[in-house]
Image (cartoon, rainbow, N blue to C red; front, side, top):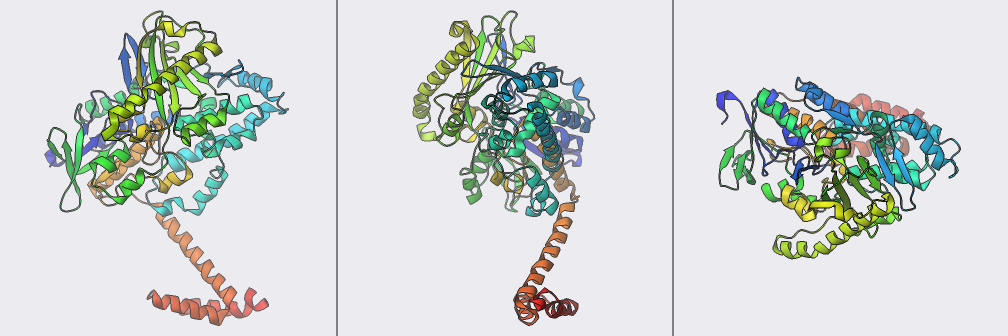
Length: 581
């Protein structure tokens, strides 16, 4: 199937997950072919060029730099040789409905001043002390998350239900939601809103996101926010270049897949392109949207249908504006916070619509990277979170046409809000050229289910073992990488996932299994719990009655109980707690 005795891996999609996985697998010695439906690399993490301006189509926050450093180091490279970073100072600027403007920063002296200005009048006498307490807890959450979640596999139930992990999960406040949790540290609405909006990096409401995601704020304040020169797409481009030039992986663009073919042996045989071409493979990795892969590329199953009913992250209307002049009022990253903060999220995630008064994000890449715009001009990306939509093939054109009114409202609202809160005059007259993505565009370009820009949500019911596995449950040579697979969404998170996926693909192809220590730990825990349960039965029922119950159960299960165990129970029944009662 593959040349020179190598195993061939076909990867569907050249997003961050696809390019990083390609580099890992090619480094391991496999023949790798990446098939991408579009004519560009990066997926959502890609660039748009228009009228001499460069836009980041999707991600623009370079967070968790050590994750990228480790990935490139794994590949024998230094990330600094591939990606030049610019620090964003301040992290971002936050605009409020009442005219207040806050700059959040990794400069602790500045943060102390900001916190004292807003928190002391709100009844928090030692705001910086509370901030440091928050940072201490968030640091612990961050360390555990990176070490025990992002870099570990959770394909089996016992990998999640380990006593050691459960105790850590409780300490990480996974049972609490972000906004109430952050409110114990901060009292003013201005600060609470500024430090909780980051949950939207995951496409989630801060009133629904687990409190453990305060690690996002931690990395902003502890490690700052960075921007790659040339745009965020330089990251997947770098992975692609390493995969191609160093490890001889192959990439084909404009090559959409129509079907993943299953053979009579119950294994994946390869992929069929829309052109009719068939490409055989020993293993297939899908970096396409996971729900789309199950629903459209693989044979229909109940599980595929169930995925469409899970909770999803938001969609967005994103405008890409080429401006005729620079806007000194705008920083690299700008947040415009809604007056009715909670209501705006409820409209997105409960009503699945655009809020009447949305919070939104404006990115000005030319503020830190002048190459993003012609001299004397600015490049602006305005991202307005919206609810997901029902996309039906039979009514595609009509539904999208109706949505134009929503887009007009979003555009008008964004322009008016920016003008009012920044003091910029006649913003619309400065827009020389405009492009936009709406939920239908996200679906059309990247096959994103319902236009969800970040895939499956990160609720407690949809993480770890509860999140779709990186290995197909039926076809053991079918694998997944990307936002909706474990460990989850976000560029650094997907990079971590690509390494896990590559390790499992390699284990399958080489026949050398990955040592799973969690399995042995779980077996020990189950043994202890079983002994405790059986002892409890003895304690409650007494020796004779318990022995009858246990022996009948053992007989039904065709299991023999060792005589010494029976003797221990009998002794306990006459001399232990039960006898004392």
